Length: 534
Image 1 (spheres, rainbow, N blue to C red):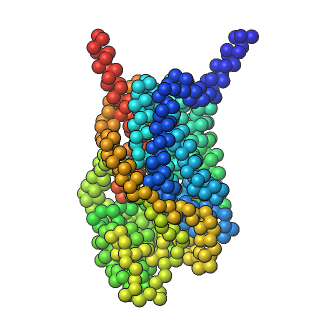
Image 2 (cartoon, rainbow, N blue to C red):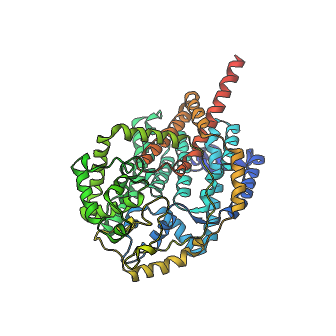
Image 3 (tube, rainbow, N blue to C red):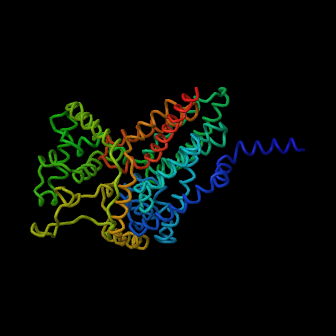
């Protein structure tokens, strides 16, 4: 009887309760550290809630647009519903709808606090001291913490990417179907939070590095793939039935090599090739003849040469949708990008490499103080505005806004009517009014900046130490660090082929890079001690 009980307990422990038992052990074996860690985090966030009440992060309002429009029988924003993915809209939308910013604040704080044991357990593979150091660094990593005071995909993606690596650790250690199923589910949810998370499917080949027979490898691989297919396939099927779009994120196609249009010295020229000439023809017909472009004296030369030109690019996206059709999936923009790179390879790769190095090593900064803003949906119309009364362009651009906001693009090239916009805004304001009126504390933001400046450590050191961690770690620990480096590198390189050097694109990865560095540091210390003993 006793023997059977032991066998049953082993089956249970091996398959279901690894994380649960490890989580309990943190409090049993390191209570004097973990409880103060929670308390310090809570105190820091009292300060941060004053400095940064719940407010919109980058493009945050578009996620609430998604939540409002997805329930409309006839959506007015099909571009948003096919471009954005559903995790962030439903997470924040449901919380705002049912409990306002207070509910978002509480849920965000819970998610953040759950990352403390997650970071601890990830680093615990290299010993208790490594786990403690990594946790302290995470708690003091204020730019990361501030994400959880924003409505955007950033905080949720950061949360899922850390939980993904914790799940990968357990999948590598325990090699059972349950752990690989959890890994597949977390992978799918990460991708549905931000499409760039698709890179984490590279976790699948990790099973080949485990010392298992073919039958076991097949079962684990099939489990992971099945979980991915069920979740992602269901979402894609829904989009296909409702919007005739069978992609995870339709608009992501337009970003291919977007930097040739707007992110560095101009590379896009009509003489680059036939596709470039075709795009110029579309610009002349669809944009330069519009009232907005005429009133602001926008010429083809300005579009080709002026930087920044993100608003021009937004209009180009809409124009391509209109002339080439939604089904073209921005094939023309991709061909133009390749023609531009082929005509200017040295310039393109020089800037690209420079930006990769910059984003890899640049230090995180404290965001500006949140201020109230109007994020309701508007149709840009200056038909009744004289030149002397035109709004001033902002952010260094030559036009104050795009002729047609790119997220208003639709398969039938039809803008919503004013009554549709008014009805949409009425629903939107009921949910988002408190977020729009968020007002931060400049004084507390300044204190946060001073505190961060006093504790931050250059990320470059963690990259270097992380490499040492890969060299000196063994087996599963080495695989985990390699995956952290590979996935981080792919996300950074992949992001920069389309986007500006924004530190927020690296921010979700920074705690993992720190863990790699801490692992490397303690592995070096261990090597030194072993040599001294000998």
